[in-house]
Length: 210
Picture 1 (cartoon, one colour):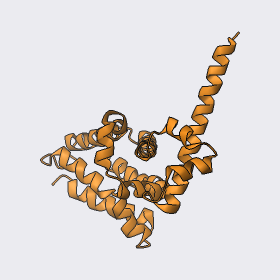
Picture 2 (picture 1 turned 135 degrees about the horizontal axis):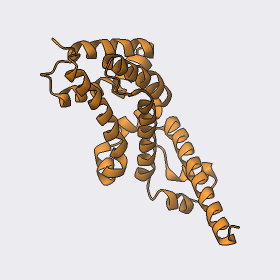
Picture 3 (picture 1 turned 180 degrees about the horizontal axis):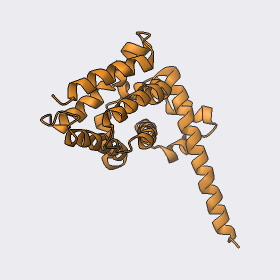
Picture 4 (picture 1 turned 60 degrees about the vertical axis):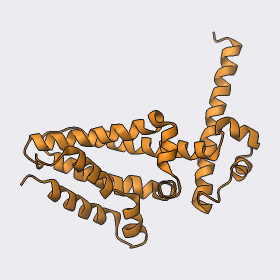
């Protein structure tokens, strides 16, 4: 039988987690409505229905709140990539094309507005430098998975072996930029799946074995 103190502690922790989830959801709504610079901690607390002091117990400043949202988006990205990076030696090109498609349709498509607001309005290097190990852990893992696919492709003669893998990896991430998504899909009206096909075609032809 659980002791009363343990039950109360467990309940308080669950309550804290639920409140933090609500804070993040509310912060996302306000960021999408008003943009990063016009979103205030006062308004976030008011909409959640808590005092500003309680909000500060979860996030000491707006930078910490933004960083938590950014980390959430990176983890969402990792979960998608984890499903599709199977390291199948037989068709690494198809895997990379699938990754690009899912990034454009599922990640940028579903999370674009928030991610772009953070990407465009925050000095990410400044933020990530403060909690590099925590914030960059997922991003590094994503990079490692893509890099592994590129190395397999080079070893199998699918990709150009003389191209440095780091250059191939950097180019890959540059081609899935939220800025490009905004310019071509949001502002330009191109369908996300069509853009993804173009991007995949350009990238895969560029790294294909000569």
